[in-house]
Length: 348
Image (cartoon, rainbow, N blue to C red; front, side, top):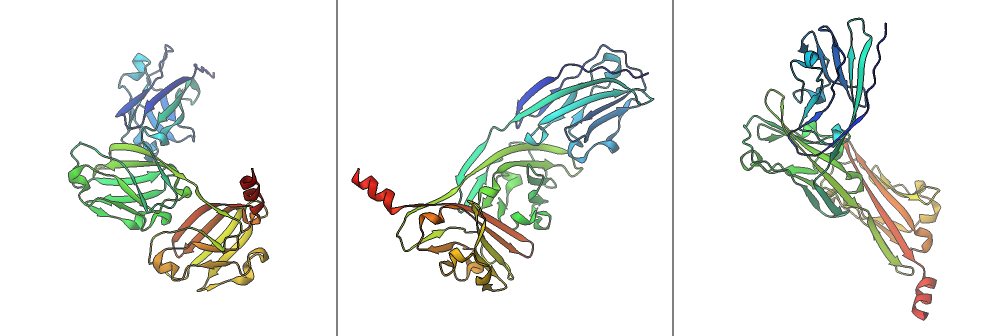
């Protein structure tokens, strides 16, 4: 026989940075001693599994290891609530508690909508040299802890263990662009410096501290907002520069591809590859009108000079840089005021 009970949905909201949160799930339905209890998230990852009077950590998704807990007498009391430690925005979404009998039939099912508010927001302009994502703690940290910074896509931004950075574990987009303080474990200042942020870096970043056994000691979120880089000039100027600066001394064999993404159709504005400009790949509209800075790989300055801009050049420009395992990207919004509109404004 299939028993199926769906209870009303609960909503839980907490601030990022709290030590723990409880996702409620209670029932008055009789639960046999051999029942199986599963908590799952939106992606059907197993958050916690309880069966045969004990947790089943081998079935648990790695992201939740050491972060979940249920009461020992849950089947007797009917309190199947889940305690989730160090919640961050990566935990937000629907959590479902399902109880099965030994034949695999559902005895009960309940959903909790979970939301995490981000308390810290950092906002900068695209083009600044660096930005700091704050994370500080007064808790004593042993020297063998592991500090990870990740974003909401689960990309590894920075890793520090036993007092040393581990760049080989970083996502390629952040290589040579991140830095933490050398004495972070003594001071408790785990803040991350991110160099040359662009709109592509808009994200929520999480600082996670692990013990030597892999248990999470602390988690904290920071939301980074990067404003669009906007350049505005008047029609008739000799040239305009679309800025893009990043880390210096990048490896050779680089491909630098400036494109106008909007409005349609997309156009190749300037392409540099194999040590030379590739004029034959350039859209006819831009021929003879563009120039990259010299020694751009040594200086990290991939700004594009556009000569004799007109209102037809208005749009969104994106520079894509690729070299070996390093990837960079920047967006610039260009607005060229027409001479006619300037004239009318002066007349009025």
